[in-house]
Image (cartoon, rainbow, N blue to C red):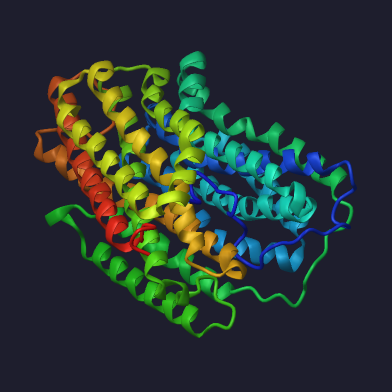
Amino acid sequence: MADNTPSERAAPPRARPVFDAGFCDEGKRRLILVAAVLGSSMGFIDGTVVSIAMPAIRQSMGASLDQATWINNAYMVTLAALILVGGAFGDRFGLARVFSMGIGVFIVSSLVCAIAPSPDVLITARLAQGAGAAMMIPGSLAMISRAYPRDIRGRAIGLWAAASAVTTASGPIIGGLALSLGGPEMWRWIFAINLPLGLIALVMIRIGVARDARQPDQPVDLLGAGLAITGLGALAWALTHLEGRGTTALTWLIGLGAIAVFLGFLWQEHRSRHPMLPLSLFSDRTFSAANAATFALYFGMSAIMFFLPMLTVAGWNISEIEAAAAFAPLSIFIAAFSTRFGRLSDRIGAGPVIATGAATVALGYTALALVAPMQLYWLTVLPAMTVAGFGMAMVVAPLSTAVMGAVADQRSGTASGVNNALSRIAGLMAVAAMGSLIGFAYARAGGVFSYGETLSDDAHIAAMGAAFAIIAWVAAGLAAFSAIIAYFGIPSKSRS
């Protein structure tokens, strides 16, 4: 899967890059490699680190649940919509130049995040952060591919992929450690740390890159990008404000408008000679099944990662570092077992491995739904998340194998970009839609405040546990759905 665990094939969404002897000074390739790892890691971490910091952010700024949702979603809207054209900008204006611009936007917006005086300012800065990350992430791997000859490229890309995978899954752990050591206001330093890291990456790129070739005639689907941002943003807003019978006419109007814009986006991609989302890829059954499984799995995982810390930290008074331990198995198992499960999928086919892994995830989330009201973190929640984390480690590499194996080599970069974008859109939609669902479930369970508020009230805490159980049941159902899709839609060696 290209989202939280970039694979060796995770090239930028446009033309597959090739070695360019004039791109960098020989002997300075490591500078480019380190800069690429720093840039992509910052982008991946900031997509997940806010989940563990959200209780502290809400308490510090007095943010509502809707505002908390948008502190997460603002980043995901621009990143998901623009990551498909990030590679195209690099082709047209120069890989190192666009990568450096992305870092510049990212560190400036990170500074604004760190000093934001209000939730609205933080949300605006997160929008800019997502745009910067969309320029950094595709360009990071493209620069490595251009800097390293094929005979030594594999190890460099492997280091990039491993670092990106571990840092993505470690986002909540990093945030939890920082908050536990520094107190509630330490969440600001989670963003501030991007400044020195970004500046180091900029210096390394400046020194390492000798010639940054441009292709001024390379087209960019700007209309498609604009429609994607508008449609995703409007849909996320509408999903966030669904309130059952209390839903306003404006919410329905914006939701219908989002659907209309999305249809316009599909039409644009159908008619464009250089689409950011080539719809023809989905004519392949394996490609469609793998991406459907990706969307469902990452929808559920994103919902769990966002709402579980609010329950354990704000409701059960668990420290941030203890709450982050629930996500440690995901990071550990991905780092330890992804390669092995990738080799297994090469031997028997990706379908059975993904189906088994997704079923294991469903089992872990089912257990989580059953134990959430018990308020026994170490004895119930952590074991359930360990099972789910092991299952996710089973599907990471095989999903990438299935996606890339379904397309011709010359389209592997585009296929990776599509898979990457879909996983991020899944995260965006999960937090938006589940935010409305968990608010409704909290109220039905007798809660009179707001899910995620830090209050020592027995009824409030019980309502939070009941509401989170609903989210875990939805995630379990989606994981089971992914297992079915993978088993029947992605062939094994014996069935191919």
